[in-house]
Image (cartoon, rainbow, N blue to C red; front, side):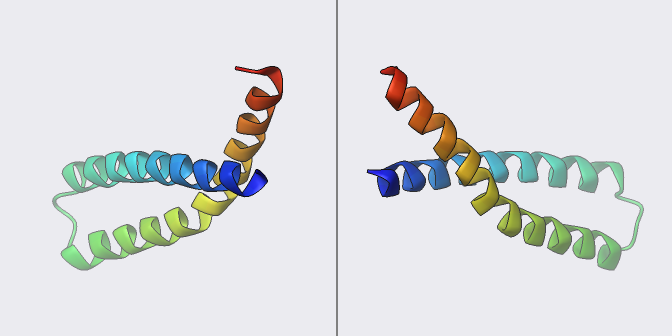
Length: 74
């Protein structure tokens, strides 16, 4: 049962991180169009690494919320 909540939390956190990362990347690329491509590429690589590290941590937070919602019957 906990594994099901963790998988749901992982999927939800993956979508949240993808949405926020894409939004940040788009705004960064639009606002910094005058910078060289190598600088922008490095920022995107940093963003990908942060997203990979943030997703499992956020999934535990979502897991906690899902367990509490399940206990309360919502």
